[in-house]
Amino acid sequence: MTNHKALQPGEPARNPQATHARIATYDWDAIAADLDREGWAVLPGLFEDGDCDTIAGLYGPSDTFRSQIHMARHGFGQGEYRYFAYPLPSLIEATRTALFPYIAPIANGWHERMGLEARFPNEHAAFLKRCHEAGQRRPTPLLLEYRAGDYNCLHQDLYGEHVFPLQVAVLLSEPGEDFTGGEFVLTEQRPRMQSRAAVVPLGKGDGVLFAVNARPHRGSRGDYRVNLRHGVSKVRSGKRHTLGIIFHDAA
Image (cartoon, rainbow, N blue to C red):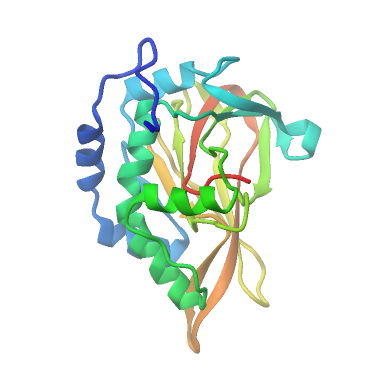
């Protein structure tokens, strides 16, 4: 069964090969080093401006999405987001598929260092098959919309037993032009230490690859596990759209 939609009206006609080629140009050794040091790494220019505008333009009621969440109703913050339905728009599906072979080895190394048994295949389709066989069949990529006064509380995106330990957020709006405020924030809690916060600098089209819930940290006595949460600070003006790409499906 095909896992992506035909191009939406106005959707950039970048084919999957072009998406794979763009992702292949990243310095993945440097990205892995950033992830080990900070728990996050920027993927500059993951989407072109036209990609960003088209994906942001999808926001609204349609069969492109399976559900809508108003954050205030659940104590998640303020603002709203929509989960995409299968089949995914082609650009999102191609990006998720193309990223996975590069980040699966990083995820496997993290699990080995943290003493976790789960290992991940090289192909995303094989991992999704594992999720679906365990009852995690609902797609998790999502499109978020923030307006002035909106924010997202610190959280982790865990949707079932099978969790891939890395995810991506792509900023679809231009800071300082489309919106002000609304910084992407990560906090890290190390054992017996106060939390450390990071504000990730992103431009329109940049992605941030970051830990879903935990990562290994190398201390003087070897590796230990640290927990991360992520969120978005209050938007002061304008409108901010973000695409979230999560690699495990939901129960």
